[in-house]
Length: 200
Image (cartoon, rainbow, N blue to C red; front, side, top):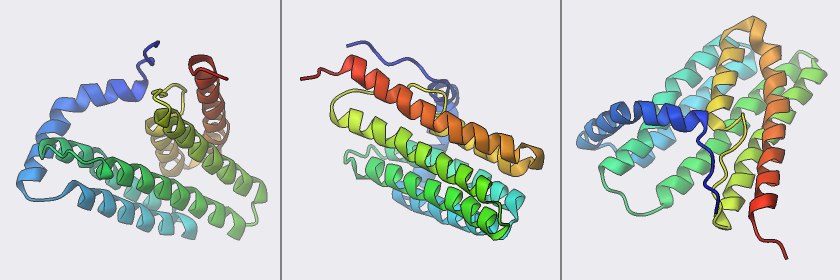
């Protein structure tokens, strides 16, 4: 089977692996469970989403930025403790989907409150695309195929979203990029699966 290509997010993780490994060991020694980090990260995202829904987009973006270390550390802590079960990975992936729903749902609510219905549709398109990207990868994994291709994996989506929230002139270009890019990535992944999985 052809190995999947190395993505930008793979390169970033590799570059930061030493730092995250040390931080993960330090947090593990402090007695903090990785699932706790995952749940606290979602709580921070939920608070940030409330700010976004109220129109305080930059404050919401700052809280989402603050949640990133928690998102990065839970896996590192799990590796430091030598965790064998796979529940942590399932929990992390599931709460990531809740995070996506909270963020884009908050944007949709904000746009609806401003009667910006076209922008609301953009937020919903970005949400659908984000779910599709993750869902296709998960189903491919069940079939034994690792699929990480496409420009808008989770790492790239987070960067685009943060830029859109923190820099006001980038809000609409960022949303357009997310709405179009995530759905293109979903289709790219489906095409990759079509070419590499046996079909009856």
